[in-house]
Length: 225
Ligand SMILES: [Zn+2]
Image (cartoon, rainbow, N blue to C red; front, side):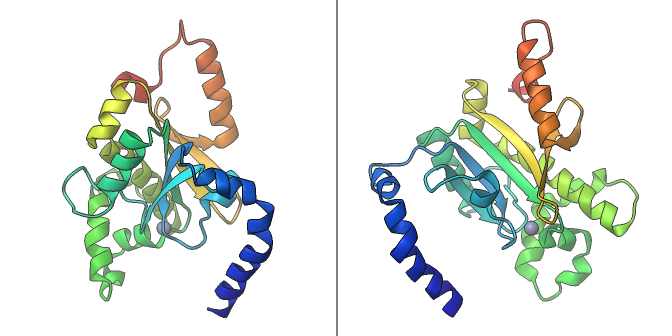
């Protein structure tokens, strides 16, 4: 705890003074760039990853970056998504899984969740992905499951009325990412290829598609909206 308290004192002494104008501006309200949904895992720091400031990302975090289908649990997920999309009108949702996710490991190995019944119940929302798993080593299957979980949660997001409405109005885009914190790498789900590609490749592909939009196919998320 001492480490954390020292951190707060340092923030108050130095960082707050340096960014005083930013914090005053935030007092007027928030207009975040995106809703960032990721795991509660301590190794993931969205603002560090995206180099964003307070006020730029609206966060939703839980074990396994899981978004249950709308209305089936009375947790905070439905409310947080509704607030971000319907009220704050974020234009993007980033659903970001990560390498070595303990929650997804637990889904694959329920025998390890004996003393964690709440975690066991929570990861049940991702159980459907197990049917799509291909054979492989433990590590390969974990990586596959982490990616499939992101795709599953993007599908669940579409059941949320605020998301569905905004997608239909083309005022919202969804992005599925996997962050490998050991290597600093991000891969992005490409619905047209139905696979994850490196972030730089995803940006290049998007620019090419946008350039040829009049002739080329639209992205799957748009056509499915
Ligand atoms: Zn995790």
